[in-house]
Length: 429
Image (cartoon, rainbow, N blue to C red; front, top):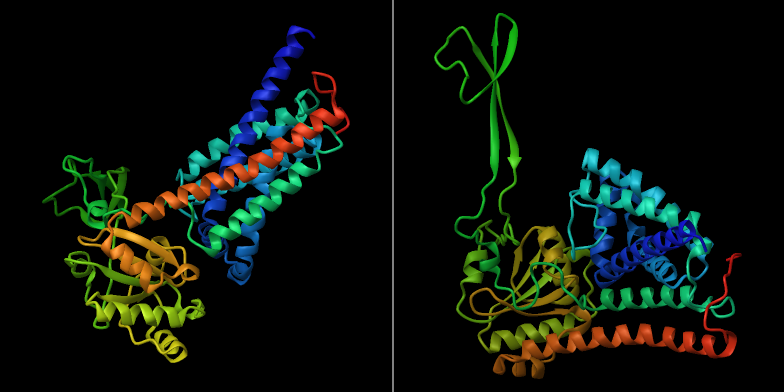
């Protein structure tokens, strides 16, 4: 092998690792929070005037997550090298001009390519995709130089297992709460502290300009040279331009309103004890299969003097429909629907708010706690830490459950079909 061939092979392997790692990471963080990706797809559809397809956003989210993750795994393991590299190149050829459109016209604030784990601007997303597009093209052009880790006899297992695993993992996180909470309302967070701006933090910087007219001619002036006191000039308009963005707290706004329109968020956060918040962002589509358990929790909270509120972004008519359907007796408050979807990925979901506005725990409606669990958590401050440790243990178990079958198949493949130390080149795959 010549020096040039070695250099090409090395660069192809590096590009393979870059594309594969980014695809796997991107697919994984979306699978952790599939509802968040579904919301992002719905934002895209609304921005493009295609609200009629919003019912398909969930199906699209699950399949796009699985496809991206599968391509990443197949790329890293070198299976179906020609088809994997071609599909990866096609995906990047589609996404790169799309993200250029997003960067220029800014219909959504961020593309959501890494979910809420890493939020980057639309321009940063575009430049990232330019790099990935170049890497994907180089991998496709030199796919036969990539080292395959599985023989042609068992390679079918890799994409099939990766795709089904991604779907299963996404569905679990969709049916419960995300195993990793990337949003600012995770358990253990104190909401008021996340809303505060540190002393000395940079502030927004603006450029102000003023348009004046004289003898039919318009000119733009700054604060330093505008014609103050000169009656020959007539003021037309002022303009404000953000020059530099200052510090933005993780939680920019937290507003909750009662029936009279009064903001009671500060009152709830400053309450000197525990409180339960039932969050139903869109109560028209909220699941009522655990309505009886929710009513039992409300009765428990009332008996123990614990405030219990249902907070929704829906109309009063929708609230009346919910109470008629479920027999709910708890009081209702209102808030922005986007805020509520950010707080918890469940409709409805339960938030246990501790003293001083600290989120002690959150539950999906499929996992509503029993009275015995509430008793234990209220009497044991370590309860929250126990739940968090359990979530981390589940995450480790899922990772092992994905890696171990691949290792076993690889070992079987190595012992059964490949006796040589070096893998044979598979130029036709």
